Image (cartoon, rainbow, N blue to C red; front, side, top):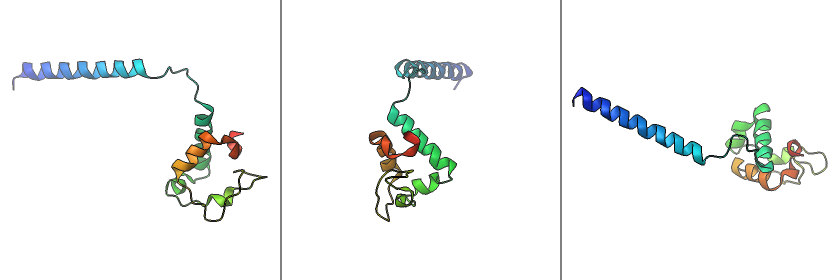
Length: 106
């Protein structure tokens, strides 16, 4: 392949990459858009797990959330039976649907 062909292909590929970036920027949400209350709550929950060093355990489904639950004192305001090993995805979903359950979302 000649050097001119390589340069043409490189320029074409760069143009495609620039166009793809421009398209993705034009359809993405504005940078000033505030996250939804559920998203902010979920972010706070992830931050709490990180600060406690429990994010990996949560992702591995090895946290018994009943040890963190108390309907009156929290930090999770619920009655959970012993052995409540919930998936991280389910817990994140609860932050979106029931933020009142979590002390960091109140």
